[in-house]
Length: 372
Ligand code: OGA
Ligand code: NI
Image (cartoon, rainbow, N blue to C red; front, side, top):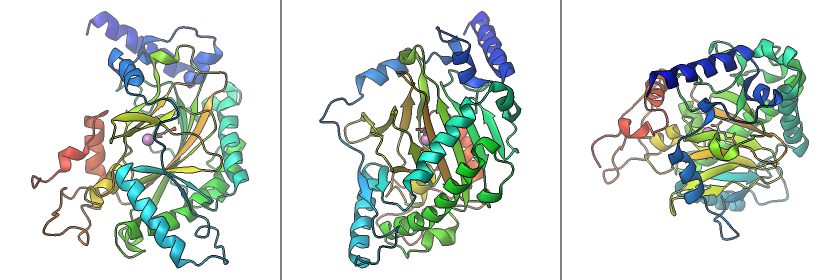
């Protein structure tokens, strides 16, 4: 690339970083034309239009109703629906790598308040918000735009508030005051729902209910509270570029604006994840694919830049092992002579190093055994 272009880009990054106001700051300043660092390649744009799946015949991400499991409904015969649900979940995790759950026991007002609280954080006066702006990974809470702003261009039309590893979320003073109560309640519910998901996923793999808990797969929880400002040229950029999550699982809450799409491999099409009131989206991440020996698949997803007149809010809750040095490989109770391990053992640290090395591509092939 020409040096002048590189120079221009570095200048744009530096300017944006110095405002400590993120993408929302650009919008507030009245920008009508995107700075070049936000312009995604022609390839991305044509992909966006060509194989997006439109119309009423669009396949839908499966919705799984957990009524009776999460809310401890005594009137239901526990065993029958549970088996059914596990079957549905297994099929969805195999075929789609993603599914929505409803009646999961997190009350509507907790979900609504969380979305509002996160919106309030991002929409508060810049004078107050800028103190949270940081790229320091050791900080428990930080606000930034694009985690890889300097290393990966083009960048996305999105700002993020990150809340790392909240163990006692309802007493955590490090959370910004404008959304502390909401993040506290929401996180407590996420920690509770984690137990149920851990059991159901273990059962879907044909294992004892407590198997994944014993492996410590979901011990750590990190929240990314995203804000997707309305974009003046949405066709030129992305809200979140195509990726798969590195987690074991991610639970995602989105408001009703829409824009999230998942890649449905059967048809190689991008399918809209239609906002469903009160639903949470469960995304299978790379580590889940790895330990399940490809029985569950980590799904590619992306977010289109926000059109219309209202910014989009979403909260991604990542569950991972809390031990970055613990080796994980295909679960030995799953592999057989006919279906030997497809992956070598790896640690989260090693995996993550590779994730960033090949950013934008799947790091999983790197860890494959040469059996298949
Ligand atoms: C993510 C992600 C989607 C969204 O944070 O990894 O895919 O809707 N987010 O914000
Ligand atoms: Ni994601």
